[in-house]
Structure formats: C-alpha cells, structure tokens
Image (cartoon, rainbow, N blue to C red; front, side, top):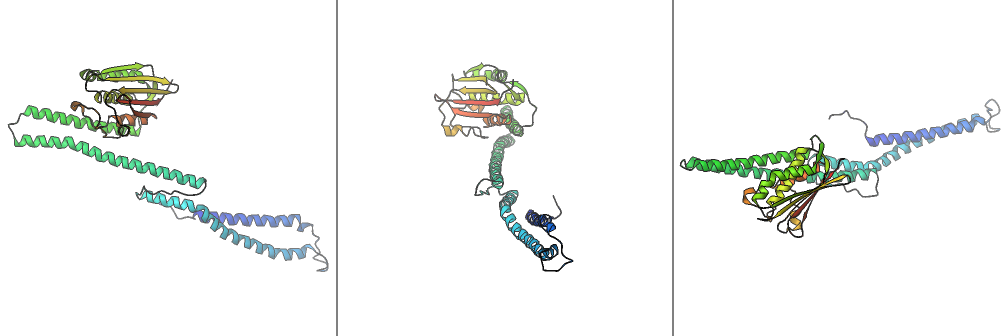
Length: 359
C-alpha cells in the first residue's frame, strides 16, 4: 500500500518533548507573573532606581525569560531526539526483523535483551510467531514433497501397466484392468484423504452437537467386517460424550482411529477397545489395540503425514497412505481438542482424544 510521506515517529516524539518543555516553561513564567510581579508596585512614573518596581523587574526579567524559553526549547529538541532514539531502538530491530521475514527469511530472531516491557514483549511475541511460521512452512513443504511422491507412485504404476499392455497385445486384459482399477482406487483414496486433511486444517465447517458414543458405534459397525476378517474382537463401551463439531469429520476421525487399531494389530486374534466418557466439561474417546510393543520415539511421529510406522504390524491388503492418524489429529485440532498417543505396556497403541464437551 502506497502512502504519502510523513513525519517519523522519532521526530513526532521529539517535537512533543520540546513542545511540552516549552509549554511548561511558559506556564512557569506565567505563574511568576501572576503570583509575584503583579503585586510589585508600579513606579514607572517616579524616580528610577530608588526602589524595586514592576517596570524595572519586567525589563530585567523579560529578556532572561525569553532566553530561558529558548534554552528549554533547544534542550527539549536535542534531548527529545536522543531519548526518542533510545526508546524506539527496539522498534527499529523489530521492523528490520519484519522486513527480513517479508523477504522470506523466517530463521531470523530478535532475541531482545533487558527487562520486560512493552517492546520486549512485542519482540518475544514476534519471535514466537516467526518460530511457528517457520515450523508451519517446513511442515507444508515436507507435506507437499511427500504428497507428490505418494501421488507419483500410482501414476507411475498405471503408466507401466499401460506400456506393458501396448507392447504385449496378447496379455490378459482382465488382469490388466483389475490391477489398473486397484491402482486408480488407491490414487483416488489418497487424493480424497489429502483434500480432507486440508479441509480439517482450515476448520471452516458448521458445528453441531455430536455424541461420540453414537459416532463410535457407527464407526465400529462399518469396520466390523474388516475386524471379523482378521478375527479381531471389537468392543465399544462407555456412556454419552457430547461435543460440538462437524458430524462428518468426527465420524471420519473415529473411523480412522478404529481402522488404524484394527489394521495395526496382532495378525490373528487381537482386540480393539473403544470407550467414550464425559469428565466435566470434557468429552473423552479412547481407542486401544493389542499388538507388538512400540518404541516411544516411533509413537511420537505417527501423527505426521505419511508416517506409516514401518515397525508396526500391517497387512498387505490394507497398506494405506500413512494419513489416517494425521487426518485424525488434524480433525481433533480443528475441534479445539487434543490427541495423545501412548504405547501400551503389554504391546499395541492407546489413543486418547479430549474434546470440549457440551451439555
């Protein structure tokens, strides 16, 4: 935005200091005149020099008062300029850091020393903002790179299958179409997951009252065939836990958590427990599954996009794109909640979701 040039803040403060000092001096002289000189007798018509009179005092006092006001004005200008510069020095550093950030350098920090005041509080807040922006940009860049890689894989497989079909017309077309359909389905699922992740990050959805217990039952009913196929016991317990949010997104969040618990479980005969409860003004959802023991350093990375947890047990028929927990975490965050992952002592994973409760 183009603006007309104006006075700098330092010059404005300098003029303010000088003006205040000049006004204070003028008021002091006015006080002297009102409460002192006016009571001195005026003998301007009598003999000069015989006794003090108002005429002599005014003639002697006026030049000295004018000189004093001039000196006060100069001191106000010079002192105000120096003081304003010292006071605005932190603001200059903050402005320089903002310009660097505007040019794309998010790694710069102000790190202002000294005791706490308004400028240092602003500098600390600006440093925190830069740190969050740098982390967010790095996360987005990493996400874009991973998404490009993940989307490239099914497209490359499709291209390879089409090349094989073109070079070998006698190849079984049914098998080729089946493999192309599977690859295309995976690409569509990945694209929808990316769109859902972006939508949940923005948080632009209509909020409604949602009971997490009913949502958990619906998700469990949907995934029951998958659990039965893997001979996994799926248990949903607990009472009503109401929260405010998008029913579609919350259902997707619970479905992702339950599906993740089913897929990353014991090969045969594992268990998945889903429990909902309300604690005061907080609604809690817990999803636990059996499985191998997980190292804590691996668990902390599972909510990052495309982190599939290569040390976890998976089946080849449900590889996934590594976005299930990332989408769940993003949906919980968009609903002003928190998601916690913890390895179970006996093996497997425990996921706990805290969401703001509603009556």
